[in-house]
Length: 247
Image 1 (tube, rainbow, N blue to C red):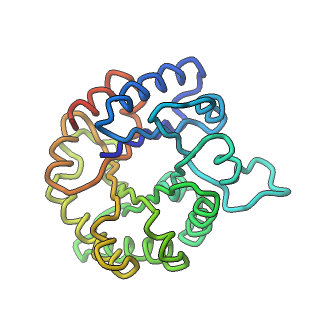
Image 2 (tube, rainbow, N blue to C red):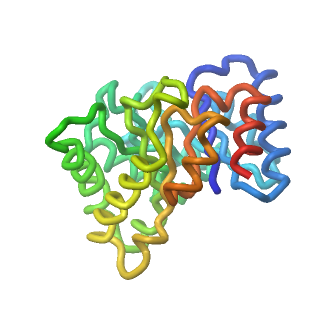
């Protein structure tokens, strides 16, 4: 199981960041789960420097450019040099700020070119009775995967994050049976791009109000390969409880 901790902009103090990394290293040391931490970019180099543990680091986003006269941009190459081995691409919060499917595809290609493992986020904003949201998910996947080579496609980790399920309590979030249906649908779309059993073996994470109260049921009944966790990952006891419940 993969547990990817997206700190977003919650953590603004380096000492707090170091304590959270220490928690991540303890969890990774157990070898039960693969722990990935995505700190604010400004902290990544310091936190990842000299890291010899099983803990991995991710960029929260990468630029859709490859460098040059682009003030304020952080490229995939810069993140790789800072110690990231993963990169979150197409997060719903970045899409809300203007990342189109085409921009997400560019970022995905740049991350792969620099040897980063992309965690590609997809997800519908809301559900409709006509199931048009399924077409939206298909479009997000097709636009991202179509330009990639066969080998590149197999390196992508997917994170399904239905926006309507974010920020709710476990009781009101996505139910395990709903997630199981979505995982099957995503694998069906992936079968267009991945040969043989590769679509079945593709790693799919879930993000959306993941808590100790629901993580075990979501994992057991949906065939996901892990979780992309936001706010619950920035409190050490909560993060440890998630890993323990999943174990």
